Length: 259
Image 1 (cartoon, one colour):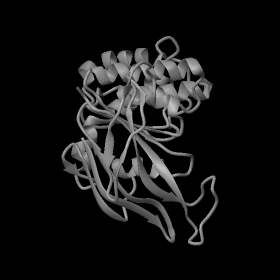
Image 2 (cartoon, rainbow, N blue to C red; image 1 turned 90 degrees about the horizontal axis):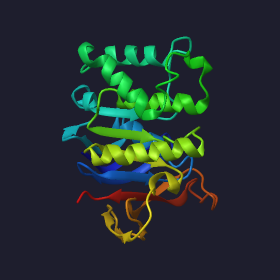
Image 3 (cartoon, helix red, strand yellow; image 1 turned 30 degrees about the vertical axis):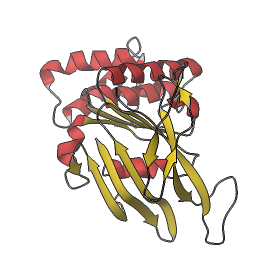
């Protein structure tokens, strides 16, 4: 579903993403862990064709990106950073406008799909309030509903737990598990391990072949996502700066293979 090869993004002398190789298969739940400022959002934007890569290759659902973005994105639901909405319109009206704006927004099924998305994210009873009256967590739930309204095959979420209280995080986690069981492929980035380790029980293990090395995973609870690590660099991390202006760091890549 998602494949990258030596994916790199530079802004002048700053390397935001460096030589990232990813292999997300259909039905996977794939989590990308890293601290704030590590380049996770930049990577997500490149996957969606919102930012051009400096070098490397991206394929989403078998098509090169961003060349075939118009064909690919109709089957992708995405939430990138803070979701935007018209503040004076209701959550429901915002979803109607979004659904009408592109392909696959079938008018005959729009109301049913919107009702279902609002129910899934817990906004069914307050969907007629103007968005300006929503809390931060409610806006985040609305952004997730927007990602779900067209019933995507692939869901790409960047920090979906931002602004959510513990109850909201738990509900979102369970929703993603339910969607995975229904066959939706999920790619999620976060700086919180708890967002991508929802289960408990026996351990599972695996690994990810990176460009430079294949690094074995550490155990995580069953029902969560096996873990590996992929070397990356960013401008700052807790260990400080190197002489080149970047500091070595690690992205944890967590993945559950479909059985």
